[in-house]
Length: 326
Image (cartoon, rainbow, N blue to C red; front, side, top):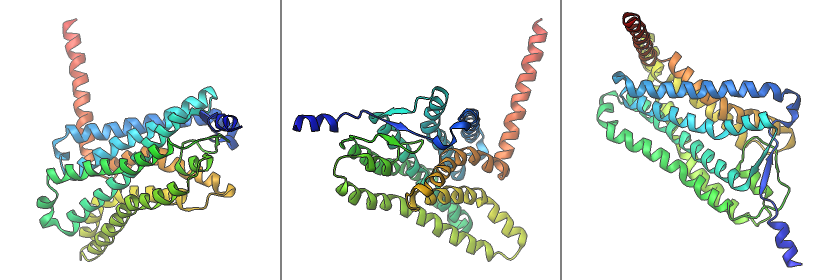
């Protein structure tokens, strides 16, 4: 009898990601939509990274952090969308237990890292606007690198610990996940093991790593807005606020959708809202970030204009050289 129970408890080797099962008739439209989103996201973020690396005028802490954010967004989207696109194309919604845990680990690490990076970027803007005379000394290249490296490292700690702990659990059914990605709360519910200790430890541990970056971001913008409002001229206020408006938009979208997903109760009525919000912070936010920073930032637009001009000049010279050889 014990042998039978052990076999039953270890019989599940994979999960079924149901995805957008309520939109089954629209799945044929979801594939090209998500494919376009993925291409635009990867192309846009890689372009931002290339501009930051290539243009000397963008070799500042603000754009160094932006390059890190764009690199993260590329990895972030690539963790979710390629598998979803394959699922929509083939109809195969299955994922192995190990594959699910790996996706959760990478996805969770990048999510926490983005939270840290956004807080670092808000602190950078705080120093630039509220402490301009101390900015160059405080936010030097070494400190900028340490902040970025610390964000990537700290972002992976909780997620990796959680993923390793989850890998020790037994999953014996059911094996359907009503989502398009592997999430912590869903995996906990599907486990047949006793997860009370894990919930007791991981939940506060996650707050320790996630809440401080949010509070730092919030505090930075309280000081920034307070400082901007004290500027006497409207031109000065507009100029000061323009340096952080793009970042503020990104922060608002990121935390707004994140709070909807993880703070609202997990009920059947709110599950579709949860999925839609997840689409925002896993797909749409990484796609619009490059657009927000490029359309609202003069330095990025100027760097893009120079890059396009050099590209056109190079292509023209190549054509003239080819004609000369003929």
